[in-house]
Image (cartoon, helix red, strand yellow):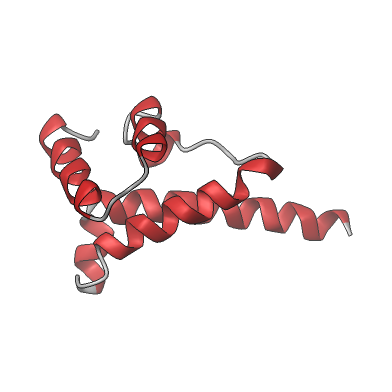
Length: 94
């Protein structure tokens, strides 16, 4: 479970990277929890990619294990996994 301290720290780091307000609100709606990231609809793909990129930019200077422990890393991985799931479903339909 994400603590308010972790969430506030992540929010500050994202604000320094000029993260979109709508993306911060989206993360708020999902409780800043990697387990609560919903699958994207087709019209949300670009927003998911943007969020994943911004989250990854925050942790770019961290080592591999630190990235996995950072809240931003967990969220970016969850978003990336949801995008991969969508792409995999699209390939199955072909």
